[in-house]
Amino acid sequence: MHRWRFLQLLAGCLIGLCLSLLIYGCQEQGAIQFSPQSQAPELQEVEIVPSPLPPETQAIVSRANPQTFVNPPHGDVRIVVISDLNSAYGSTEYEPEVDKGIALIPFWKPDLVLCGGDMIAGQKLDLSDEQIRAMWAAFDQHVAAPLRQQNMPFGFTIGNHDASAALGTDGNFIFQRERDLAVEYWHNPAHDPGLRFIDRFEFPYYYTFERRGIFFMAWDGSSHHIPPDKLAWVEQALSSAAARSARMRILVSHLPLYAVATGRDSAFEVMENADALRELLERYNVHTYISGHHHAYYPGHKGKLQLLHTGILGSGARQLIASQTPPRKTITVMDIALDTSASTTYTTYDMQTLEPIRTDELPRFLTGHNGVVLRRDVEPEELTASERSECENRLNATLCRA
Image 1 (cartoon, rainbow, N blue to C red):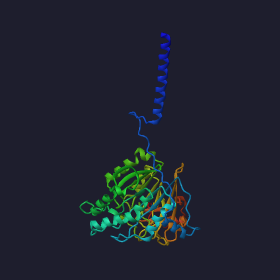
Image 2: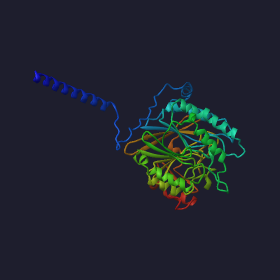
Image 3: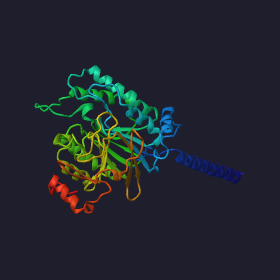
Image 4: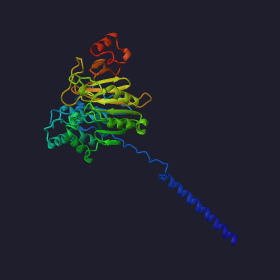
């Protein structure tokens, strides 16, 4: 009898042990266990679920020439790049091409929209706070709100007409009120741009974010000068683990490094110390520098850095330097292949005709005052003797090094 009770007790213990192990195993699969050495689970990006095209998008597409208005092959990542949306000083009106461009964005189904700055029409000291707020409200109505309704992330840089960083003789910002009101607009939770920030640092002037494995940096190129302490942050951010582990690095600035457009070919219309900035970006393997301000589309490169000079949607399109190409308003679709080559393809549309602009329509090189820029499909060794001579006659041998 005692032996039988002992066997019953032993069997019960074994069954209880098995049940405990089974329950523990289920809990292990269903819960995340943290230890001092473990990292937080990786955040998953929210997928943009394509929805039927809005009626205004369908209307534009239906009127376009189907032989010329084509949707290019979608890369691993697609970005629609816009810039310089503003009209005359103080205006709360936007050119028809701005509304047309924003309405077309759902057609291309991008992962991100990037803006090269000048979203409003400031940089005028006699504008009141109410007028500046009204311009940001108009921007929200025409641009930001439609993108939020599409759940479209919006990255941007601040332009000189948004909140210029120009300094007075006393070393203070001339347009401090405009800078304060830009912060007021962008720090309002209702105006969340939908970005996955890495470092908000001095958002909206200096910040970084990530999208689809690409590291993006925006710096304050609303004037030609970046202070040393901000350059220290730039280098720190580019040397961070997030930047180094990214599959590509892209920087967006309002002013370009090098001049490309008539009426903008002077020292204060480009970033100062352009070669030193370019070498800094090359050192950290930045792939592309996207800019606005010159109101002219030019896909260029210099050294190891790709230079996307974004065209304009607002008022004031300009001609390229020493070019007979007419000024045009444009929008660019940038497709990125994240293979070993990490390459980019641009499809840029004339906003009047919606026809793609052929790269070979554009000058093979541009000779701005601070250095030559080659078209992105032209290598330095491919320049003819005549072209090299032309460049050196306009500049000099040093500035013609590409």
